[in-house]
Image (cartoon, rainbow, N blue to C red; front, side):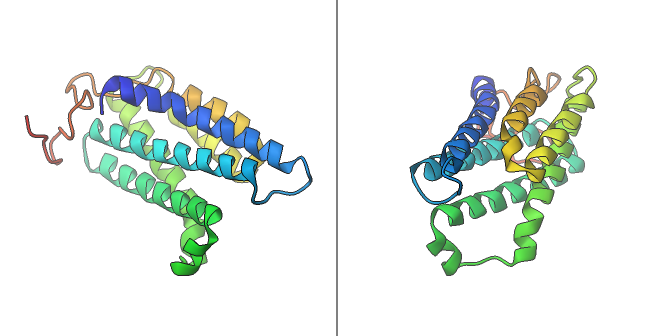
Amino acid sequence: MRRGTARFIASLVPALLLVYATARWVDGRDGSQGPGAAWNVGHVAFLGAFVGFGLLTVTLWRSSAGSSGTAAATASFSGVLLFCWVILTDLSPALDRLASLPDLVMAMGPLVFIAGFVALLAIHCRQAGVPRWWLRPVIALIALVLVGANLDLLPATAALIALSLWDVPLRHPSTGVGSGQIFGHEGHPSSAN
């Protein structure tokens, strides 16, 4: 993924979270949350945000050397997939009837995503030499815990996610990995040149 594309996605994720927050507010004005235009728009935006988190996970993983980065990326991406499944089953309950996942697996999705994404962001920021590298993952953790506690805190989560990703280099400066290559560091398949 090219740096400009990755930067665009890093900006798009918080924007989509804000769209979801706005749609939830509009949908809830009648006193209930449920199927309808605002509900559907919100869920599509939320799905888009998690697709963006998935793409950011891949981008951060590509530029984070070592097995710790791979483990964190695996956890983050697994959580993203579970979130996407939940959102898709909200949009189309027939999917849930076709292939229902155990409640325990569904409950673990947010925890796995949070742990993986925060760890991956920490690994990436440290390896990339981001000043006060530890601050970015702490901000992301606060953001994700807030929304996990209460969906009404989505605007704060969106702002904090934007802050946690603000000006984070989306390629490793010493290797150039992430600057458009498919894969590129040791242990990962290399792209064809």
